Image (cartoon, rainbow over all chains, first blue to last red; front, side, top):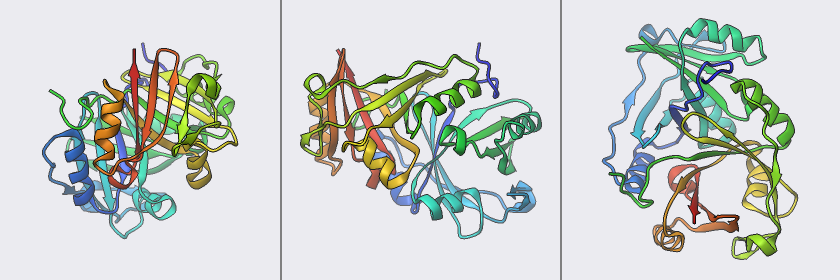
Length: 150
Length: 150
């Protein structure tokens, strides 16, 4: 049984920051022999109630998902407003931004991780659930995204 | 059925470059509530027959593996000699270096991908199989590792 801080050890998603979601989506579609998925824009802040480093997060992103055999690849093209996605692109360029886990009890997990020096960076609501990015980079060398679905 | 260039869409491994494999292994062990695995050193070139950018590869690395629910996390601490691992650490610092797929027919895959402007960067033998790193970064924004087990 999976223990640990998250209560799960299944990686549900690998998130990759890109500059051009159309171009990179086409490359992934060609590589894996699937249809290019349509990207969609994350919701506005009135719906997401998103925060980034404790402030309202007006940053949005284009997202596209590829369902691979055992997890999803999420492509993320940030807009120009501040967000964890924009920050990563500015600091590191394109590349793997996070690995995601489906958890239960979002606030409890955020509090637990913060107590281990793994602070919340950004969180928000989406239709049917919510997400939180945790800064686990000093410890794990990659950020973790928590996903909770209702 | 999984098609595409690899003949598989199952991500078997996420490879992360680290500076201190002891410290990062302990962090992963604590995070996932498991024992810290022992790291081991990759074999010498007489066993690996490794090449890096077409030249003999004397670069070696300490490796540690965490078996998560649906894939492995591989931690990689490069030594000072040239390798794809050392190059990544020097250029990007710590972080996700590759995602790996188990394939069949290594040389055919390498040739197929090279024909799509996805060149071989490094390859080598290990006990029971062989690996190849492919530079898919321009297209996919992450490198791909091919693994073939006998």
